[in-house]
Structures are given as structure tokens and as C-alpha cells.
Length: 223
Image 1 (cartoon, rainbow, N blue to C red):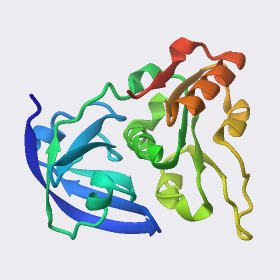
Image 2 (image 1 turned 60 degrees about the horizontal axis):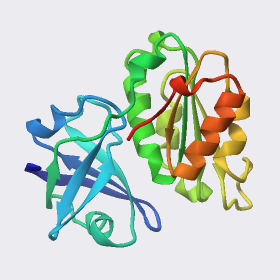
Image 3 (image 1 turned 90 degrees about the horizontal axis):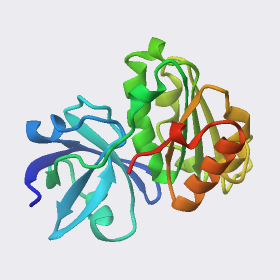
Image 4 (image 1 turned 180 degrees about the vertical axis):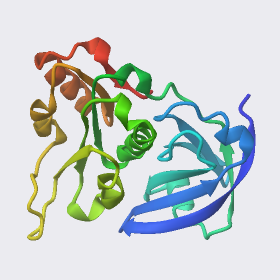
């Protein structure tokens, strides 16, 4: 039986039309149970519940989420005013085994709001950056307007970030297409990969990694 705890919305920031960053102040039974980047919590509002990946690193007393508006709990959560009460359950999911990447190159590949668990990993790794080799994030986003936390992540120590968008505009000088197109150029013999996104993408990326010499035993999903 799932136990629900009272949290409060402390910040809501509109990133782009339909994309919102939300922060919740969570009680000790929730943040103390957060053990691995890549885990998620269930949020309950108006009698319905939905899972959201935690974008903050373990140890955080406030949990950040990346919410795409549309329907159901996502739409309600993205519309709440600051200070509103929210019910949350303890973190779930196996998350990412960050220690498996110690002494190796870490490659993170994600699309859309799946950037949230990758942000959690990157902040966790930043606390002990010397333990890892090259750290690279490959992200596919809908448009240049929907690339959250870019300046923040670029400020982390020795992290390479590469972004591809599906819908570029006149001001976008980067690549367009699928995130899979970035993978071959990011592989090294020591790569450990964390993948987050739709199954079709993660399957294709895992196959590209295997062709590049990265065994399936060094490729991880967070759920």
C-alpha cells in the first residue's frame, strides 16, 4: 500500500508554451528515500496520480520536475500557484547505477522531458567529478525554445552537451533531426551509457552503442 506525504509547491516557472518547471518542498520520509538519480515520484492531485522523474540529485530537500502540460495530473500540477499543497509518495524505480561509470566515460542520451533524470545524474556526478572520465549529454528536443536548464548544465564542471532539435528556426545554428544521429560520434571504448526516453529511441541507441563496441552490460535504463 502506497503512503502519501504532504508537499508544497515552492516554484513554478514557465519555460515555453506547454513546458513548465515545478519545484516541490518534500518532507523527510520522501527525500531521505531518494537514493539514486533517475528515480521518480508519484504525485496525487484531485484524486488522480501520475509519475514524474526527479530532476534534482539525491540529498535535495526540494524536488524539481519538468512538466509538459496537456491533461490530467500534469496539467493540474503545471497550473498550481506557489504554496499549494501536493501529495507525493516516496521515490520509486531502480534509477541509474552511477557507480558503474566510475573510471569510465559517461554518456547520457535523452529526449524531451526525459532530460529531468539526466539533470539529476549530472548534478550528482558534479559532486565527485574527478571519479569519471568524459561526461557527455546528448539531448533531442522539440525546438530551440524547449531546451531547459542549458546554461545551468553548461556551467557544470567538464560536461559536454550536444542538442539536436526537430523544429529549428532561423536563429538555430545546431543540428536538426533525431538524437540518434549524435550517438556514433560520442562513443569511446570506455563508455557507460544511461538512456531515457521512448522505447524506440532507447532500442536504436543501444544498437548503435553495441555496434560501436559498447556492450549491453554497460547500457542502462532508469526503469
